[in-house]
Image (tube, rainbow over all chains, first blue to last red; front, side):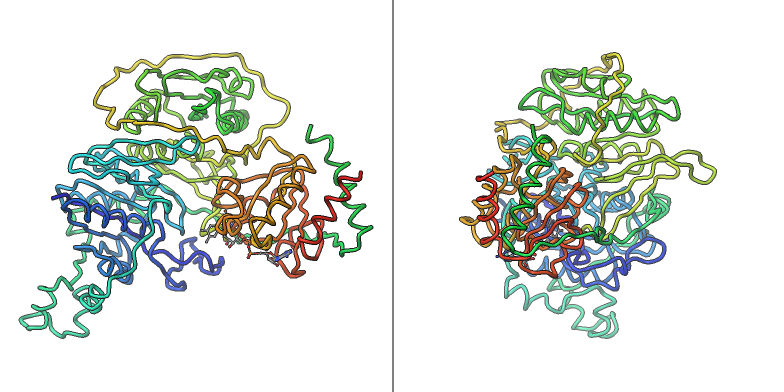
Length: 294
Length: 330
Ligand SMILES: Cc1cc2nc3c(=O)[nH]c(=O)nc-3n(C[C@H](O)[C@H](O)[C@H](O)COP(=O)(O)OP(=O)(O)OC[C@H]3O[C@@H](n4cnc5c(N)ncnc54)[C@H](O)[C@@H]3O)c2cc1C
């Protein structure tokens, strides 16, 4: 039985935001933004589920984030994850990729006996593509980045295709390994209806308290636990973390300045579709640019 | 001030990658005011055949490690060797190209060295920071290209960054340093080689936008793959390259390697002609430093017009054939 960890992140939907979403200290005001399951992480999730379909495997999805990040863990359960864990603590706030990878690596060590770690190629809020490799380094795993296909799945190794940018590489890689998955690898599946019924009320213990009442003794709680509906939350102390390596304290980088990108230009010469004007324009252009192209 | 730059070779040609030359020059210009040193590090099976170019463009010294087993990217081996080089050289700054190789290795090294790393920088400069003396200011687009963030690593050393290809072009006049190469001594360990490369297929289509002065790009407004021929013809008529917006790529009008923008190539040609491209922030991130921008768009309100110098409002399916006609006549 293989143990697969998927690293997932809840991200602001960067397609529709502006600098107003930034706080004065340069950090992101996440509360002000709609959030989504990071797109590449869905491809990592799909990869895990396909491996599980091919060989015996347990798929565990972990995310470091605020309590609201439970939303993507529920999505992961709907898709078919076996277990999910929220890693959440105020002490993690302001983490850069180094501090984030430290926390995730310690969580993976706590889970233990892991064969495969899958991460999305990059998150759409930071676009750094750094957390995956930094986790690999910290847990001492081999890595293959920019995966575009999983060709062969066996108990001992995978054959993967990697986008080497200038060349396409087919690589045989033994377990344990960490892979970063691009969106070319597969099409993520839709949530499964039965899983949605099973997990629609899943949440962290504190979220469930609101609906189920006091945590002690109650039948409802036992049912929730038996049905894997109580999402565990790991804090810094559960992981025995060195607080100097967490959050902003453990982050060597600082945001020094943030600028909104504004439109420049302004001295636009507009031509209408008058043929003579256009003729003059293209001829001038070709004259101006003829020599530079030699 | 000492800067290490990671030198990469194009496996298809055996020559230096453009980004490595750009970094050599950038490192040289950054250390120059401090009489510092720009040091290249190279790991692989053979040195790039045109190594001397890195020195012409400002590298002071190249430290290299060669082994026949290192023809391909074995991340663990590369990381261990480069880490040993960095520990021996104790640089202030380490720069990688934001290539698939650079973005594979740089995070491994930053993690091992417990230092800060800034991805995908588009500008770098050195300046005083409080009482800490000169540090590296690293500018990068963030949040889907909606903002520009300046990131610093105030305390830890080295300060590390990956840098986009094509944004730090060296000028015509070069420093022309003498060639100085040094092998790096380190015992090779078989257990560093874990992956087996079953095959590698060179990609033939990587387009070198940096060598071209005119780019004609098409977007969703082109409407169909058949219409995209107009874009190709216009590019041919100008002797330029063809580019595309992501929407055009997603619709299958043009191949992915022609995409320009935040998740595609960053270009700065002398003339950029955007046809049927609205000018989204992500697209502009890849082309707004072009010297001259011309836009053809049926919507006079399209944001592309606010960065364009020349514009034609109208249907590109009617306008481009007219342009082609005139260009042919001339
Ligand atoms: C994380 C992220 C990364 C991205 N990266 C990139 C990137 O690298 N590059 C990129 O380009 N995009 C990128 N995008 C997508 C970007 O947001 C836009 O969706 C995309 O650039 C739009 O392409 P377009 O301008 O071709 O299409 P549209 O926005 O649909 O614009 C089409 C334009 O064509 C005009 N038009 C229509 N018909 C005609 C006609 N007959 N004649 C003339 N004009 C006509 C319309 O007026 C319109 O302005 C990214 C998005 C995200 C979220």
